[in-house]
Length: 317
Length: 226
Image 1 (cartoon, chains in turn red, yellow):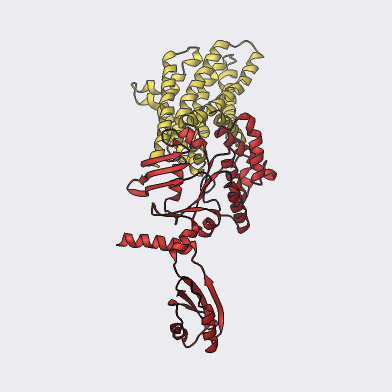
Image 2 (cartoon, one colour):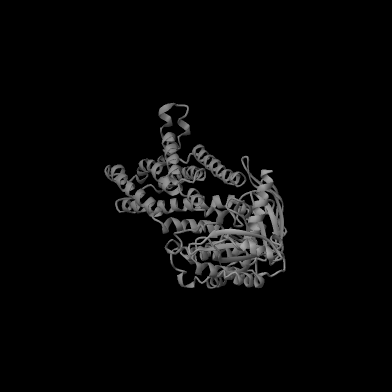
């Protein structure tokens, strides 16, 4: 559906996107993940044909964006970063204008506009001026504009930025449901969001692809062992001594002193060993009160930090 | 392209811009109508346009300065340039929309003609030629204003560049005889005498084409530089 081949974008001497290639199949929901300034928006802008790559090829549904821009662009619905909108139009006028720009046929237009307004919950405010709407509504108006032509591909640049938690959940649900009918690419720097919505993650840093995989695989790859978080009353630092008597502990890290006199540690154990029972028994024996004992999984966040950290080390070396 | 024309014309009249443009122009026309026509007890409606054409220098930027500058600043250009419409059509769409406002303005000035008809029969052919000339001059001015708007994201700068250029062009004959033919506004002066001046029309059209094409090139090029 979407194919990028050795795409590079230079701004003067600055390499914003450095020789990236990837493939996105029909029906996938893909997350483009990276810190600010990693090249996410630039990549999206190139896919949508807003800017031209310095080098490389972008094929959308069989059409080259540079050679056949009209046909390629027809298949895309784009929600740009920062949701730019025409403030002096009403919601309905805006969606109608987008439908006209996308060349939705006259017969379908009315029906499409109605459907899209319903889907994005905008029917009530359809006659309001866009400038009078709150951020959450604006986001949905922008999404409605992207959806109105029923495009095969939806490209959403930071779709949840600036929303309150309730709105974020709503938009995420909406995107998930859209994934059933459209191929979706969304960019985000929020990791939990990507792991919730996307089936595939492309991690970008400094214009380069660091990893392409499912969120689960990335999490699994990152951490072979498991991590245990422990908060314990331990004034005399006995925990290290106890730890030595338990097999399967790889490492114990002191995190911080809490105000209530407890201490926080993370314990890294070997894979598939659960030391919690033994740890609890031994601490109880020493009359150390455990306040918290929790097994935590490696998150996408860890994967991300690790991958990006690795890249930075390479650069330093 | 039709979608863009429709939206742009609508925008002119949803915001105060269209009204300010037409209102200011008509207000000044009323003054000139009195000074140049009524005062002399004349029926020569076209005389009003000698003065009215100078007003274009100051009000055309109202129409053109936001054309591309605002889209760029607000970011809506992303919606425009990612839609399946070529840059040429986008530029032509906006250009034609501004011309439509000019036509509406010209239609409004016929009101003064109506007044003259109460007192006699003005020479209708001369008036039509004058309106054609006025349209041509506006067209050339708009093409430059549009170009100025495409090179900056600041509306004010676009406006100032436009007015500056028009004023320089206006006073060119004062600097040198050789430059005199380049003054767009001086070229207009033949029309109210009832002359369809091919040379002038050709110049207006060439000038317009030059700046419309330049605008397309600027916007097209920004895609790869941006």
